Image 1 (cartoon, rainbow, N blue to C red):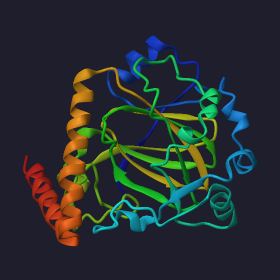
Image 2: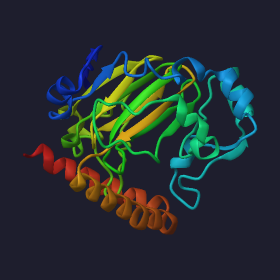
Image 3: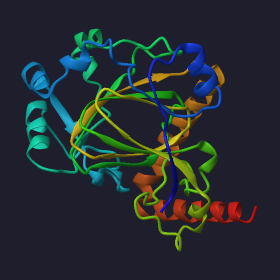
Image 4: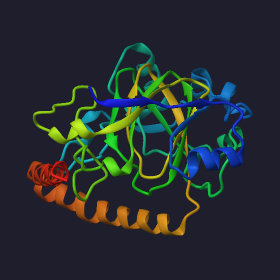
Length: 284
């Protein structure tokens, strides 16, 4: 199995302690109480979303959305939000909702959470909620804009595995993307020998908890139960923001275009380049 350390859990963290112990060294941490003052902590229940916003038509995705080709990152279907929640309640299912900003359709929901004062630079326009069925997962990747991420869990539990940015070659990052396709749960050391050098973090995120994921951290997310969370993003560095914009341009211009043109052949090419880079790393 991969070498994974447990992530610390903290209560009562103040700004200066967080800055010294976690922000500056870019070290993840779980806040036990960051969302305690939010009305959303108790208000955002399954029944609440069904009743107030069940009419919204939302895009839902399965693992097929990651397959190369013309439907790369395209939703499987669009259905009423209430129907989607009912599907999640019925049984384990690989069906997630992301890349959909519910706050644009229901701006009043923004009154139910607070931007933490633990750090500066929080974005106002880009909070996202994530919903997923029990057993579904989010493949190993890092966030393209290089923001710090505060992931707050409302319903269900999530298993999160993290790797620092300096582990990119050990986990076989695909060139021109923010993705790795290694199996975190069943690492194949024969196919990916550099994985033996990889070290990371692991945590089960419970309702009411917030995970701080530093900029550029790789993360794999698995829905232990079906559930939902919100992601708040912060970036107070102009240099980091510029690098994030370059990432976005490279990903959408190069990777998306080549996926549509070459399909599986483009993925094979990237996989071979990733193995070449990892082999060079093992020789260092």
